[in-house]
Length: 258
Image 1 (tube, rainbow, N blue to C red):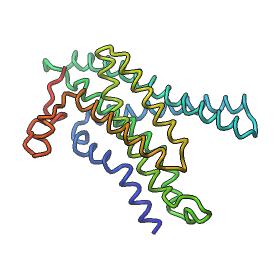
Image 2: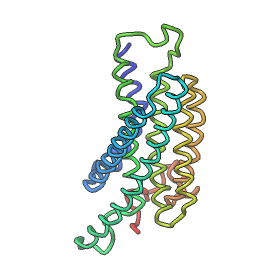
Image 3: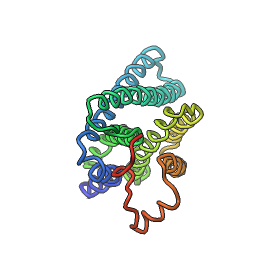
Image 4: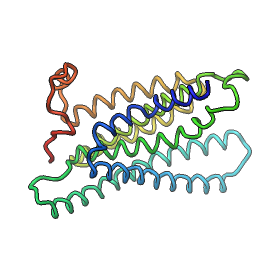
């Protein structure tokens, strides 16, 4: 049973990301390189968040429950803000890298477009975030022990997997909207991305009332997915063609770089 929970939760959380990697990134070495670099930038933001958290705990160390909760809220906010700062730093780095690739490339167009970069970097951020969010939980799912034996929710592993899935996909959508906002200097869009990230992270404090965190997170995910779809150049017409398997013009396969 424990193995079934481990495998099932792993595929719930990372199945879509794995499919996206295989279908859109694995065959392109340049995209794979940018994917790994995106994960590295997220790791650096995590390292700095951990450092800030360690200092904050040392300064405000107390056994008071309210102090601990406030420190946890502070840590989450700092972590989200640092992730978005490093997303912006990664965007600036990719812009410079693209100019360098254009210089040495014999083609007249960029080897990879900004929209492709936003998708790949967002997927890198999401995968790394998901791995660090769920790896310890998946390890615990292998046993020994029984979740809920003392009255806790027996849906802990399943809820954590679905929350991780939402975070992974949200990082993709945030990346697409974020990069487009940087390109077009839409600062209000940047602010909305950051606020939505803070909101999704904040609703996790509703746990173990999982419906209080999963439902708002998936609503935000659907809204961000719609926004990212139209930002990436999607339309109702090509969505219809795609669902009817008549669209021969895939976003990442044949997108004209800009």
